Image 1 (cartoon, rainbow, N blue to C red):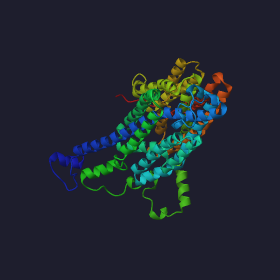
Image 2 (tube, rainbow, N blue to C red):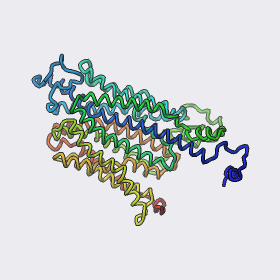
Image 3 (cartoon, helix red, strand yellow):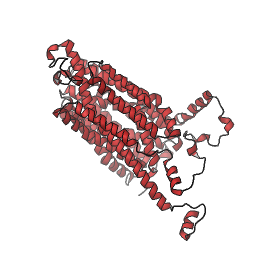
Image 4 (cartoon, rainbow, N blue to C red):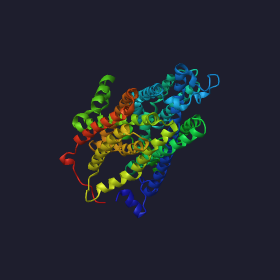
Length: 526
């Protein structure tokens, strides 16, 4: 029993005793934390709903513009409406079935592929400096600016395609400049996870991450069918503009969230009615506690030497354990798989002669499996593996589940490329979805190999690897898709054969990365 607790038990009060009882203070902290988490949940919900709602209609609108301009030169007889009578986005100017021509689809794939690559540049340049600034000045202002930049990134292509007769379609690439405001969605995502980590207790943090992921999957599950229905009964512009408004609502909701930097310290100080001691780790938000207690004179170095020293210190863990470097490289493959997911809509539309709205419904099968994976399948399997007779440690369980997920990912994406009909394509997408736990499982296993003060550094490198993978992967997959279209037949699925092959290669890496003798343990009985 602590001194404060003993005083409370005797009904005594000391000068340094808290003004509010610990149990009351804890309840107030929990209430404020829950309020902040509720706001962050609303932000995730609005942004995820909006992004999923506008994805398919913007694909259709962009396709319509490319298609109209193609047939203006290739075959004007297919134009249903002249330029003088055509509306925003050239919707209705050409029958959608004519827009599945290889020339149109190749142009669309290249346009979208380069767009995703360009959109990765702001995050790649600004992730580290914005992260340092957020540690020093607070998360909220940078999160707001980054999220607002993401909204503008989505609104600019709508502006270009609305006034498509005044712009070249490649002008949509200029939306990348909006990300320079604070890194765009990549930085916004990073800051969101940081804000949740600031507010949530260590015991609840993982559960909250999975809950947030489930909300995002719920948006992926419900919005594409709604978007498809709205596109069928009206114009693609209706769901596209609704999606933008939902994302704007997410920015507004985030403005009501309190600053989360040192959240519990600030709330404890307010509850206790007394200031916190100065000093400590919170005063130095660099995230590198190795510099604590350093003499001031030792800090008076040239900026060049200081930065080089920090750079060297930040990557020492890569030399200490080769498995860490190998696992970080694996995230390059995760980025490639993520870009491949974005190609499914166009691939299904072209190969199976589906409209964009019909292809959207097909991709829902994958989302359903992922939703079940996060909410039921993984939790049940995880509990089974950590109980007798297996009684695996959490570290060993994560490694084995990651290996199984990589195998399913490799098999599933290869089958997607080979599926000759819609039912088999839906089943193949479901198998590929079962491998979607690779990212979280690999992160969890990687964290178990590192001391706590090095995990943030490793995750920062993961973000850079993922962004580079996205930048290189998008145009590469677009070019591979275009080549597959030129070959015709089953080769239309060539990008997914490549993704399956890459997943297989990283599966071998996961089997090479094992546990050392001193790391193997059993789960404790609960």
